Length: 236
Length: 236
DNA sequence: ATTGACCAAATTTTCGAAAATGCTCTGATG
DNA sequence: CATCAGAGCATTTTCGAAAATTTGGTCAAT
Image (tube, rainbow over all chains, first blue to last red; front, top):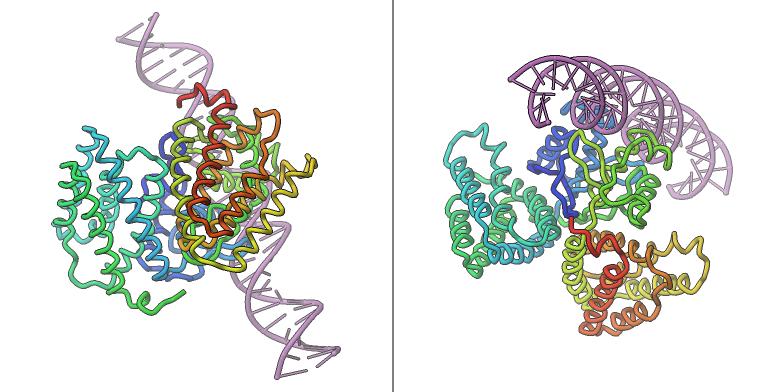
């Protein structure tokens, strides 16, 4: 989906990259974008045909995705795509609201030049690519830039671990977001909402930033719920 | 250290086990207990001598530990033990306090028979083994039972993801706890504190349970800070 | 008709060697 | 004297085959 540093938990050093990168992002992309259905069994043979890699590499990639929560496995049994459900989405959403509030508030209270610059820069990239009707590159780069922008907003937050957890949930949400995009006709306007959010943060308006954040998150959820047929009825 | 289901992120199904279990817990134990120092380089050759396993298995185990935050790695570079620092401990502690409050409060508000039973049972195991001077089994089973008890207290909480994050931090804290035990002469009294906590939860006393929780966590931290020489001065 | 055991096929897990990559020491050059 | 390039060494990463485990089906017994 778009991790520059896959599932690194923060101790207090910097993030890290892990081998088999292409594989991981490839499979993640397939899961997130709905190419593989929830609960589907992931056979090594198939994966190997679609993406390259040997047994070991594939195994590592899948294990990585397990730790991200996109794939499930029991000992000596096969790997399956993690199920998606309304209950799960609700859980993720409520926590996201909480974490986003906390990190944004913290981040705003710690001023920083490079931090502001990164917000402006990532926003620029996001809107620029939203306006370009360049379909090919768009579908690929879109989640990456979206992720980067939202990360920039809260990156100055003082707690590496809270930042990490926020990131995990953001990625999980990306899966549901992507599901929503799949069933939608006209693309939502990503520019105005994000620009307002950035302005609020740069203006150090905590209350406004929190409110816009909540609106943003809830809006996404509402959209997904309305557009994805499987989730309307699906329980488990 | 004591995961029954290593680093499984919760979607909404159940937890999962992953292969190479012995290896993972073995290395984790070595890191948590301080056999391997923070920032130490983990050479495959050494690991292979101490624990069994082939290249691939070891690699998988280490990758697993990376996702747990106990090991670091950069692409095509070696694995190292995650650094430990005061800043990290403080971050973990603050979040733990928050998550523990939330989960305990939630759990108490959802009554449940099997839940109460599990609390009583796990507490029984914990105190029973605390009184036994059976050193051999103790050092092995201690963290497992400790973990199980604290998990039982909050297991009824409605949010799988919050429960997951709480667990991650609990395990991280176990590393620092273990560091503290290493340098301490007489063992702390684990019985009274835990029994009081259990009583408060079973009596549905939210305020008291939260307070005792906070005391418990802060007490651990204070102990670690006071007893571990490396952390007194260590910055990075 | 249902249960239990057993065999065969399919799939996963493990393994150590081969290939690739990063690291260090030496020697040469500005 | 400091810096840089190259070769040799150490370590990691990748790979596909062998071993181990699960799954599904068949047959006999209750």
